[in-house]
Image 1 (cartoon, rainbow, N blue to C red):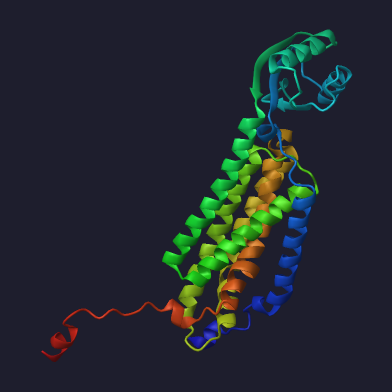
Image 2: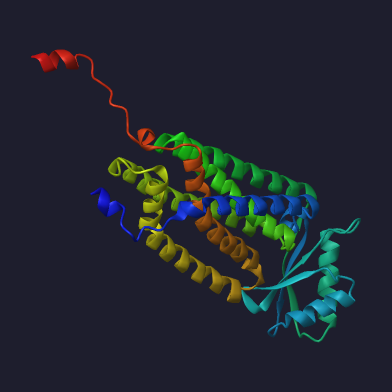
Amino acid sequence: MLELFKAKNTIRFMKYSKPATWLSALLIIASIASLSINWINWGLDFTGGTLIEVGFEQPAVLPDVRETLAEASFSGAIVQHFGSSREVMIRIAPQDGVKGVVIGTQILEALQAADYGKVDMRRIEFVGPNVGEELAEDGGLAIIIALICIMIYVSARFEWRLATGSVLALAHDIILTLGVFSFFQIEFDLTVLAALMAVVGYSLNDTIVVFDRIRENFRLMATATPDEVVDKSLTQTLTRTMITSGTTIFVLASLFIVGGALIHGFATALLIGVVVGTYSSIYVASSLAVKLGINRDHMIPEVVEKEGADQDALM
């Protein structure tokens, strides 16, 4: 049985754990540095502002609409199709001393004055900066609570060394994703926050699959080292990981390319998260568990003797 587990087709992942650890450390430092310098390019969901939906009589050309708004002193407006080519959503950053209703009226008048045919106001909403700040705080708190709950769950199901590795891997994924958004100043809105929560779930699922196999192989490979057990476990789950990640990336790439600007940030965050999450399941979660000293003894459940078992055996 042991010879079967030590087959030549086992990939020696842990052989490259040290270079991978240094790579992860450098990327985390770079991400934290970017967050410290550039912070996050918050969207209107967090900074506040005015959201306006207008309907055009004919398909709207977004560059022309942006040019019209720029001429009307709204050069920073975010213009996107919403639902169809005749529906346009316009987002304006808050302006001191100007109410959202007034901004909406000015934008509608500017569009009606241009040669776009009939233009109707469909919806106008105003998000205050206090609401946006509360959303940012609640979103960050939700991620922290999720990580704590995950650590409790994995500790109960597996072992604290594996739990520590999984939570640090999830933190690694979130920090790197935020670092990319900070470095490239990609707009961070509520859809991106939802994507971050999805990344946590996706990465955890991949990690749990690997940990299940590690626990099983520790019990089967009695004389193998922790590195050999982890290598075998990762090799056995590699096909499943590549198929799952590959199909997910294929769908997300399609959303990124043809999904439109409205979900561009969502697709970007998930693409980064899936790639980084797949990497962290191998070289962060599993590698950290090995570095923390995981071994076969930690995977074998303790046998609890029942009261009176000795007397029953004598009888």
